[in-house]
Amino acid sequence: MNRHTFTERTLIFILATLILTTPALAEEISGKETQTARTFWGLAAEKLEYRYSDTDEELAYIEGDAFYGTDELKLRWLLEAEWDKAHSAWETLENQFVIQTPVSEFWDAKAGLRVDTPKGQNRRYGVLGLTGLAPQWLEVDTSLFVSDKGDASMDFEVEYELLVTNYWIASASFETRIAFHEDRETGVGEGLNHTETGIRLSYDLAYRSFSPYVGVVHERQYGAAADMTEAEGGDTENWFAVIGARMMF
Image 1 (cartoon, helix red, strand yellow):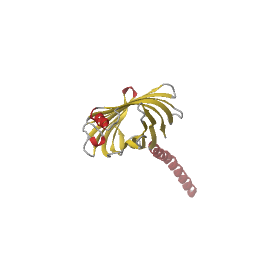
Image 2: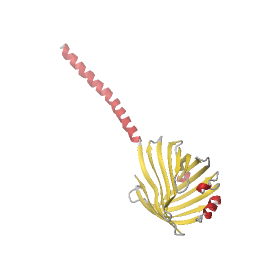
Image 3: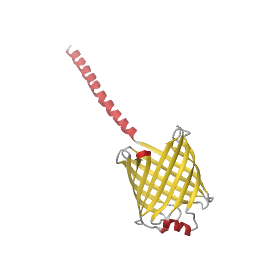
Image 4: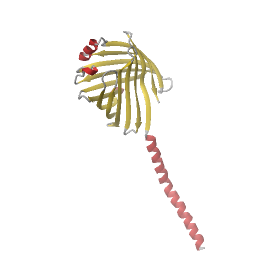
């Protein structure tokens, strides 16, 4: 009798222990799954396009990034490059490796390293920047660079997307770069160097994963940068017809 009572009490104790600990265990597992789910990665080519200018210049252009991390901290690789068909060379080839973290509800700060390896002189830069969403749904990306030669410069990019229909999207972009020091070896003049303005119309074939587009891009150089380009026989202003695609994975 006493042994039977002891067995019943033991079973009740075990069941009570399981009942009490299971929710805590489930919560712990759920927490781990949530933490795992918050780590994410992605790969995107915002612009992968062919450009043909009004002076018969042909370029291949790519702008994209890859990232891995959480909402609080992520590592990003940013690529921007321009291939000149006539010279079979990279006119620009820029890689940035930055760490990005939120500093407000709509803005992230970033810091890291930029490496330029186009034809001609190479450069390395320290990077500090901000990226985020400004009022009126303007996507803004701006960075300050200091080269391994001690030269400082900054760029500013802004883009706006207009949803024409659920699939057709019109986007307008503007980009400029300003240098605080002259670097003649890389064709950079002090002050405003160049602007690029583009308008593109895309169609979402597979949600936002694959969106072919057509558009127009206007590039112009200014000041000392334009003088250096003219001295080398280059054009300081071009209109380009573009065809390309935006891809995300």
